[in-house]
Amino acid sequence: MRTPKHIGIIMDGNGRWAKRRGLPRTAGHRAGTNATREIVRACGELNISYLTTYVFSAENWGRPSLEVSMLMDLLVEMTRRELENLNKNNVRLNAIGDMSKLPPKTRKELLNGIENTKNNTGLNLILAISYGGRSEIVNAAKKFASDVLKDPNALENLNEKSFSSYLYTKNIPDPDLIIRTGGDCRISNFLLWQSAYSEIYITETLWPDFDKNCLKEAIEDYNKRDRRFGKVKDD
Image (cartoon, rainbow, N blue to C red; front, top):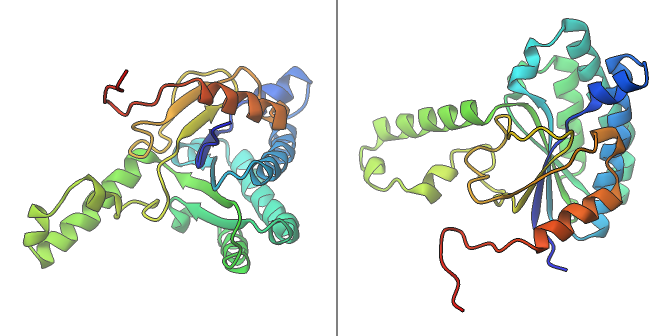
């Protein structure tokens, strides 16, 4: 079976999962962390090199303040709780997004997790937090413009590869497969530049119910795809 090198996941459906059970949305988010733990473990077992999970979008700051506060606290709790397991399973933690917007406690715990797993050589787990694809591209354009002011020749040397070096993901390969749980058929501002040729897999399964078998089904579907990257394959 051909295994994707990099999988991105839009983890959707926590709120609906909770609603169907008569539970508060916060219960759905907490249940979602169990699914995250299982999928991280499964990706390590399947020799996936990179896993990017869409934890908290730039637009999520517009949610009710109590829900946002709970999500930030849950991130602190999960990072602290899972640090031992990450090291045990040789997982390297990283994050992309506007970290400056995170509460100090959340940012401190996240940076601590990144620092304490930086020498691991297995799965690279990338958390997209306070992340938006459009703002990432805008920020990259600003950084490039600043470099052009210092060296006008930089403008002539700009190409897709060099522009990619200004993105949050400059040292991360583009995702081969993007999975969206919860059934919605949209990309929701996730890795807009990087997903230009990603295979998209949509499942009705809500994130808290997504498990290793669901992941294998997505990878099996990926294996059926004919990836041509805009070219024509020889017969």
